[in-house]
Length: 211
Image (cartoon, rainbow, N blue to C red; front, side, top):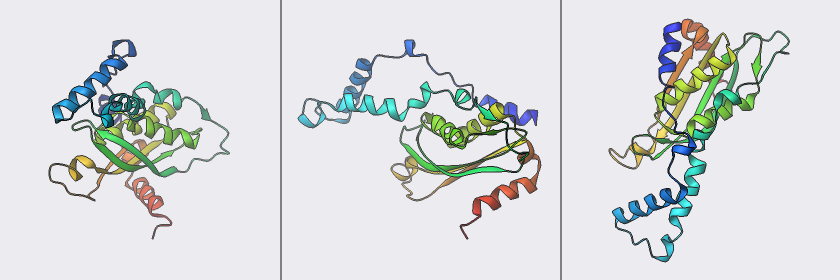
């Protein structure tokens, strides 16, 4: 179990630059102009005059996860659970992320489950955790591990299961250009990792109501 958590934690060691070390908004807009010129565009034409400002503003939203702390979001738990200790599953959490290799969209949904050990999370906290990690440059494998590790660390449940299924536009829009293909990744901790029966319960609940 310790080895599993260690391997997951290693994926969460990426450095996030503090705001004071980042380029200014004006520098970001200048960088967009450079890219437009590199593509062959005339940045002085009417349709592109405000594009650098729009792109910079859009990036603040699309990559807002760098300024959010998932541990703080998960900080509040609830202990009045009436002895409930069975699986809690939030499925079909939609997200949009961006591939760190080509900076094109990843579009998918996440399914997150955990086995409580005396306390539970507010359900919206799980969706917000997915959103925080999605709004950063990602690989799907890393994002899956980050969500699992962060919830496991904050809640200390008996186990966490995360499945992400997504379509990568770097496969659909460039390269081999295969639209519609999806990638599925999973990460398990605790009882989900150690017990095939708990994994089967997780998959059974995911399918419930869909057959």
